Amino acid sequence: MIPYQFVYTVQLGIKSLLLHKLRSGLTMLGIIFGVCSVIAMLAIGEGASYEAQERIKRLGSTNVIINSVKPPEDTQGSSSSNRSFEVHYGLTYDDASRLQHTLPSIERVVPMRIIRENARYDQNEVPCQVIGTLPAYQLVQGVHIAKGRFLTRTDERHARNVCVLTVGLAKRLFGFRDPMEGVIRVQGDYYQVVGMLQETGTMEQRPQKGDSDGEAIDNNIYIPLSTARARFGETLVRRNSGSFSAESVQLHRIVVRMKDTNGVLIAEPQILSMLKRFHSKIDYELIVPLQLLREAEATKRMFNIVLGSIAAISLLVGGIGIMNIMLATVTERTREIGVRRALGAKKRDIVRQFLIETVVLSVGGGLIGVLIGILVPVIVSYATDMKTVITWWSVLLAFGISGFTGILFGLYPASQAAELDPIEALRHE
Image (cartoon, rainbow, N blue to C red):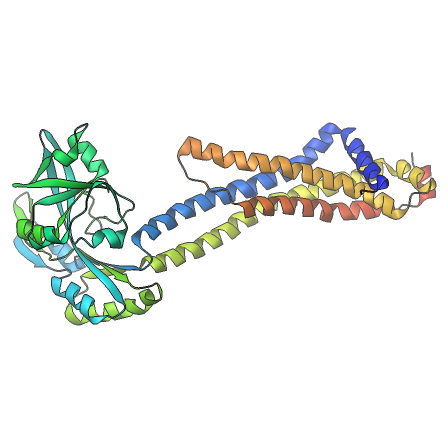
């Protein structure tokens, strides 16, 4: 049961604030903008961090990705004009076999060849990436089959001319026709479409860093690795004006899946040591999604702290504004305080009255700020297609700080009012 005296004090405080609506509203603005900025900034930061972490998670937290990289000296040499030569670099089939049979913590090894070609169907021609891989790719990368099936061991064993298209590429090639009934042509070979998959991540990046000649990441064709080896060979020829260069790369990427996350960080130095032993030059790179994920999470925490600190300054300014207004109010209402004290009100009654007024200002401003703070990220997402994530803890944090601000910055004016001498207060004009 709430005491009647407390209810009366709350009513009196609200009535006093309503007597000066404009001043009370302007005082609340600092709290409103502070709470709004805390929620909105954290929602935008959380959204950006969420997208980055999701991209990393799609690579697989138990995966280690090894890419073939052309050494710098070979990159410089290939830019020379009027020269014809062949460059050997990158990962090999022996590397994949050694990884599979040497490290006990490895569950699966999925080698990949990535060839940039044009895919044709009827009159349509689309630049794409032909990815030769094993059936285990589906399990390791967690791809979702939208229609049909993925590659099988039989396809790999017999080097069949079958392929699986990403949904995006299937739409570009076939339009409104059913891709499952079609045969596409890549170079001089024809491939029967046996399935379509929904690309779930950004795994299929450029085989070489700095390669600006690329296409959308969902323009991928998956064929058996044995088929890719038989149809395209291991030497890729690039022709420029007056010269040509040939690159001999057996594998462009090896995805190593560990049995658990504990084995990922342990296996990384072992994989590096093995590669250094059999490669005379650094023609490879390691990507450990688990490390990237932890770094992204650490960056997210730091980012949230910075954004929260900046937004908290607004709440601090709002609290100072409340204290300033309440101190002015104490001066204006000195005679009222004297009358109440003369009629028997105690110091705690005066403190309670002024403290309730500051809490009403801060909590009221906090509630309005929460509503605006939730609305702003929604508008940002709608207007810019930027993902925002409103977390429950950011709402509670912002609203809790607004209430705490009201109590903290209201105590001093309330205590100043309570300490006034009743006789001197009654003489105040």
